Length: 221
Image 1 (cartoon, helix red, strand yellow):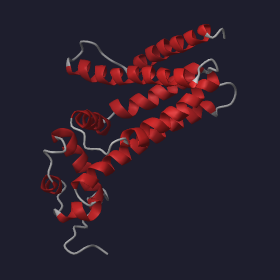
Image 2 (cartoon, helix red, strand yellow; image 1 turned 60 degrees about the vertical axis):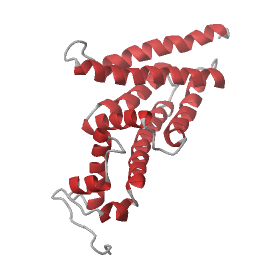
Image 3 (cartoon, one colour; image 1 turned 90 degrees about the horizontal axis):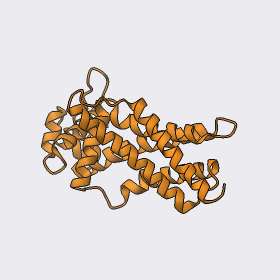
Image 4 (cartoon, one colour; image 1 turned 120 degrees about the vertical axis):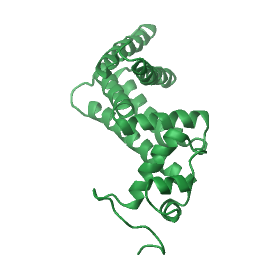
């Protein structure tokens, strides 16, 4: 049963009020930032009444958190699935296959499509002006992925210990994040330096695999 005065209209494509509010808020937060986006702005852009935000999400702060939780969960599950696909494929897993699968799962959701590009803007704004609970990003996305990826790397590369594998992952992620930033920067300059995902992945995989194998020489593997 709907709350009193609650908007329950659906769009022509079947989207309900809650979906409209979510998508609209995400877009506004990305373009304006958290502080410059009001509940009234969200409701007006979503063609809903103001009470809808409180009814479905419990206010602007909770709506912002819900956007992050959903997006982080989507990214986390995609990255975990990419690791599981390589490690359960049968036979001895290859280092390059693991790195390539992880790189693709990392890059594609962040640089392909309008919604993904919006999320990059949201991430940038959150880094400059944080509003998430302390440790949420680490707990809901970074730590679970690092744990599974670290175990996979140590299985494939037994010369890596836990301390080294954490550094290795941070360096791989650093390359991937730089690739995301570089793609956006160079695309703003037109055709100055065309950036393709396939090329970025291939270079990162070659560079990272060579660096990881260098640890083997240190341990006489």
